[in-house]
Image (cartoon, rainbow, N blue to C red; front, side):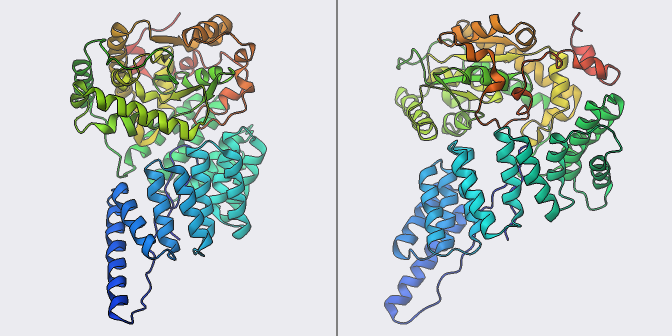
Length: 519
């Protein structure tokens, strides 16, 4: 079985591509020529796929399968390429072809279909059906159990998630990610709990990888924090961050303060005027929510999603994968982009949004790091409204350090790096605010949880929405939530996260020195 991809915080794992064998039948010279042509197409397709050239891979695979459709592994690979190209319905159809043509290990294909359905098309009921089919074929198929637990977590079903993870743990007793998720979901009353001891033993095991030590270390930190042993919790978090820094992946890199500051400079220079193209504006379909990680963006989205006109989009990849990717040298090339290109990007974004959320009115695009791209967002969507979620800086930066953000936030592993990144974020946001003061709302998390209604009314008014009582109870939302805050936002609004830094005051000197303590 191919090794599945590893998720950072939510346990979705996806098998990737296959190297399927071609028929060796060779009789006439015509047959030989066709077989060689098919072999060439297959070789080129796999070369493109392995190099990440998914459009080229899809073209070669489509040509191959038009000549020889009875190649289930190639249908599998075509589905994989189409998913990477955001051609989600086509990917589902290609995976179905692989199943219909007798693909080996069909449970893997059902898993891939489940990932497309839940991760890309927001159809969790159908995803659950696919995982059920995978487990009907292979009841001990570990990735399906793991992902089923993740799906139940996304939907707020704690008991069902625990049950799926417990079954997974029977198959892989030492799996770090399963132990991590059970630690989050379990009511642990003592550091002597059996699960705590298993986690500690797994961290210290000679076979533990840096990935394992990071996953488990953050879980152990959470447990000790809940138990009120803050010194031990911080020690666990520190070790977890050190392990996370040792994880090497294709996309991992060390945080570079000079490079981050230079990038901020380039963004400010590239987008130095509020002028936007003369394209349709007004009330835009996407409503953008951004800011620092752990600053309340998930709560803001939950509040908005309770409104009858709003669909929760979650952490969409559309800005980086469609808007930013369109420019070879970003942000420089975006400055003088032709009006026609901007219009094409707008259409591409909205078309993709429609695929994922058909017939929706307003869709939230809640990707925290989009704060970097507000200049480009405003060029493509001149009427865009942007919610910038804010939190007391010491609490915010500490929460980043205590979260397992992995390679997507390399600054998160070091308190001084977090301070630097936070200051660059605020410097850039001050620039965007100076250009579009009426289109960017700073939503203060601490003020919101302290006195919800006036801030919720202000948020709805900013978004051009009439007040609805349901927005006062964001914890009652039934949508899927796929972030680190998934369980927090399913609770009634509370204030206990404000002032959390005091529990760790003796360990966070860089944060205390950088920011004023609140009264």
